[in-house]
Length: 358
Image 1 (spheres, helix red, strand yellow):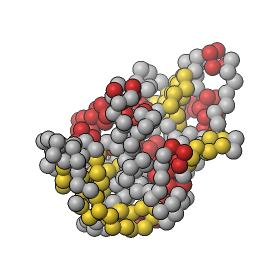
Image 2 (image 1 turned 180 degrees about the vertical axis):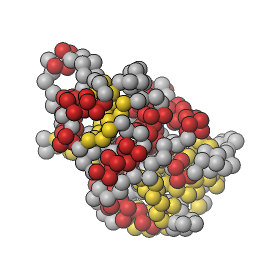
Image 3 (image 1 turned 45 degrees about the vertical axis):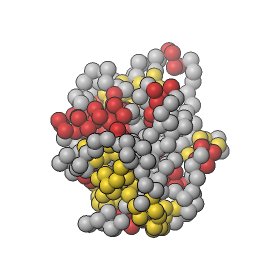
Image 4 (image 1 turned 135 degrees about the vertical axis):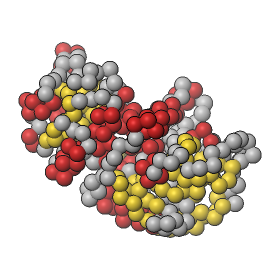
């Protein structure tokens, strides 16, 4: 059995504190990964708070979906396999990135290779203990991706932010390279999406964010222009994009950003909602067919998408967004700073050298 340090919250919204736990010996195809790096994601913030706003005074509560404290957050995980069950088979010897969106394995979505859409998911860091820890149990080696010599702090972002942006961009891959693409929210995810969009051939990318610093960073990463939401009229967006805006990638996901997107899109445009800020989507239904708009939700990506993304990074390099590394023991402080909007890029928690030993 492995003695693991976990940084966990005893209740929703409670302080994140260090606890020493004993992990059972891995069974079947289970593996135990010694965590070296774990990204801090906005989803962690929502899980810690216990839910999402659905607008109109309604809320989606994680407790209603089977999430129960203590909470061990963290789903952007890199580490090394240190133990494995008797049926695990051959295992990577080097560092691995973990795909955290583990499904039930038997439902329609899982059988179709879409475990991230499983209604009975066992997602690491949400339904099962995650990477704010010295060790994490992964149900099967197929969720492990050899990262070779890729910087582990960068690879820690593969399982969520990288995969999420890659999956969202696949939904607009049919658009011509010159089509205007609006990216709303230039935080860690938005910055990743801008860099990936440039890598995949999009030429006219307009970032929208309230922060001047984030707008500057968006330009540095390849955006053609960056606007404050107060300036982002349909006319200004069309001018900044050099033509019609045919796609909006909304990494905020609020009522205000949904309104901004639908007003800015050209006929036949697509709104891809990725952010989980909360609220309701309101739009006159007759205009949906008249303008031939498409509204799509995008939730992380499949196991095959993860394989594609890792291959993409090996060929083109990872998006070079600001990554700040902090000791694992600072998990609670970092999460609070993220909630206050004080983190411009991404923060990765580190065990061992440069971090908190597990």
